[in-house]
Image (cartoon, rainbow, N blue to C red; front, top):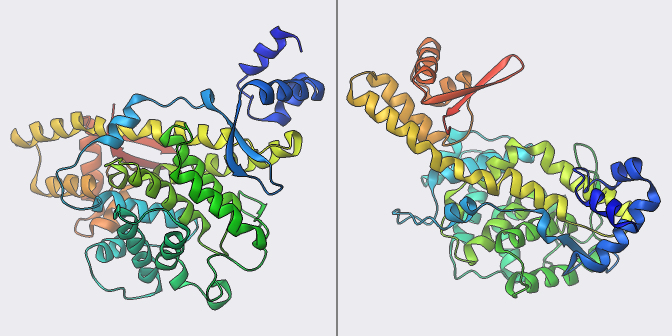
Length: 390
């Protein structure tokens, strides 16, 4: 293959979309490029696809910022195993991703130790139990503990038809994911135990892979295998966090990972779909698109919360100067605790705060935006606000 063409293809922004690359250069050129990548740049993993071939990735395609590591290693003064504010957002977001309704009020109730009042709160309780389980570093990643985590988080709250058979860790029948953004058939049930054993071994061995990317690989592989009838996405995201906790990243449970995924949900599903479509051309499960998605939309955005300090300083100065009313003080402190770095609408704030008229809410966001404490983003006819991180 011509070296100049190969270099040009490697620098193409559509490199990870093989169908586009074929259209742009030709099927023959893409075939030649894949041959060179297999020989020189692809790194193989001790995880197998449905046909027994090794999964691969391009190590240099996903560039992590140092701020991601700083955020994950940041120590907390709290004696709690996880941040209530972050995990409220984590639970809310991970359920939204799977189109499961939940309310922040109910999540706060359950996280604060109240008993569930309905089926929705039972699901939330399951997520709380899961977070309690993975926050305990004595709970190592084993097949038995994965089953315990699944039972606590998802399995105990399923309809009879979606439950696992007694004595089995994984589903006993085929599963198809059709509609929405992802169309996929899970691994044949008889092969799941072998592949999940590979995953456990991979999580506990030194593969030379970057920890953050390895957590992402675990996340992808659980969703790819689809070892359960229901709750695979929740388990994939919990396994991601669990691995980081096991590796000593002290802030993993003080950061709402799923909120970043929820904000970029289309790209999240597109990464899965792209891997499937590329497989049709390359016959390889190249996980690079998913890892790049995580780096760009999750890891490299985690430092945003640290950048809120300037806005909080502005608020404190305004408060000291008597420019903030008591109601505005309550509203801002609620925004800080309830939403963190996440976006919110005036209607959402009115509903969640539940102690201020809409006119007061509207006046508050406009005033705080003018002071540079809040920023806004327009989505068609809707406007959402967040604590300014610029």
